Each structure stands twice: as structure tokens, then as C-alpha cells.
Image 1 (cartoon, one colour):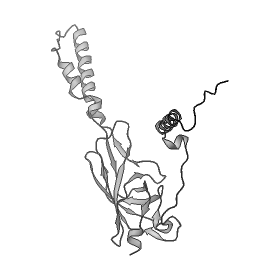
Image 2: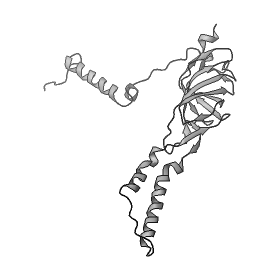
Image 3: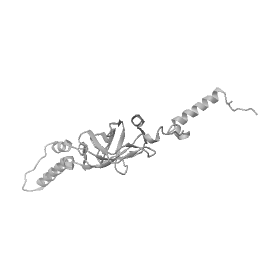
Amino acid sequence: MVDTSTPAGSPANAATQAGSARREEDAPGGKIAGGRVGAGMLASRSLTVPQGTLIPAVLETGLDSTLAGLARAVVSSDIRGFDGTKILIPRGSRLIGEYSANADNGQNRMLVNWIRLIRPDGATIAIGSPSADTMGRGGIRARVNTHFLERFSGAILQSALDIGVNFASRSSNSPVIVALPGTTGAIRQTVTPNDVRPTLKVNPATSISVFVARDLDFSGVENR
């Protein structure tokens, strides 16, 4: 019997292993899907606010989706490092963020991206984390103005004109009314429901949370 297996050190076997490695990397999730993930340690547990921490805060400015703008909030509770021994984000720290305009139809939550945190002692860090409500759900619950009249006034007016024309044409004592070509079509095309977006508003003093999106290392300001 002839051994048809490929020697371990042959070029063909090396190519097969390389192809297998590429398939593993290309799989959904990359190497995590089919390989091993190494564990690490936080560089300084007492000086790190870990990813996933919820920072409670209160809005100082209102939000209005009519135009994009900036927002400000104040932290309402002390936030300690990973091991709980040191306060890294004291109550009263300021948060600066930004939000976008043009909410989509059906949307009832506003998303603020908090870009900077400033402590009372002047220490600052690029926080780069999204807003959440007090339960950690993404976005901030907002009051919605759907602009119903603006969205459907054209359709309502068109329907009223159609009803009037039909009623008048069926009346024996009324002259025949002929609608001008394109009149009702022009009304229909003036404003469509999708052209008018809802407006979202959030009042100042609303309780919110900031979902920390990455580890925040304060060793650069605490060790001075």
C-alpha cells in the first residue's frame, strides 16, 4: 500500500495550513470565532473606570432635534475606580456632548454622544461614550411632535375638494364644475408625509446615564 499523505514539512502541507488559518480569520468574528482569546489585566484597577460603567447625570441644557447642537450635563453621583477604593469622577463633574438633527419617523429617543468630561479639579478626559436612560437603554426618551397637520394637510385639502366637486356635480341646481388639470395633483405633491420629520425635545433637568464605551484611565492625572 502506498502512503498518499502529505509530509508535515512539505510545501503543500504548509499551504494547506495557511489556507485554513485564512479561513479561520475570515469567519464571522475573526479569530475569536474559532480560536482562543488571551486574558489581560487592567493596568491600574484603582485608577480605571471600566467599560460598561453607567455614569448617572442630569441634563443642564435642553435638546431639540430641529437643529444639531451641543449638550451639557452634570454628574450626579461619585464614580469610583474598578476596585472601588478611589473616586475618579466626582459628583459635579461636567459632561459636554453633541447630538444630531433630523429624527426619523417613529423615533422617540434622542442619542447624545458625550465627547468630553471635565472634573471640578480641572482634569479632563475624552470620554467618547453614548447617552442612555437611567436603566441603561440607549438614547434619551423625548417628547415627540409629529407635525400631523403639516404632514397631512395636503391630503386633507385634496379630499375636501374632491368631496365638494362630487357633491356639486350631483346637485341639479348647481352648474357643472370642472377641476383644472393637475390642480389636485399639485396639492398632493406639495408636501408628502415623509417630507416632514418629527421634532424631538428633551427638557433640562432630565435624569440620564452615560454608558462608558471604553476603559477610562485616570493614572495620568491622579499620579501627579
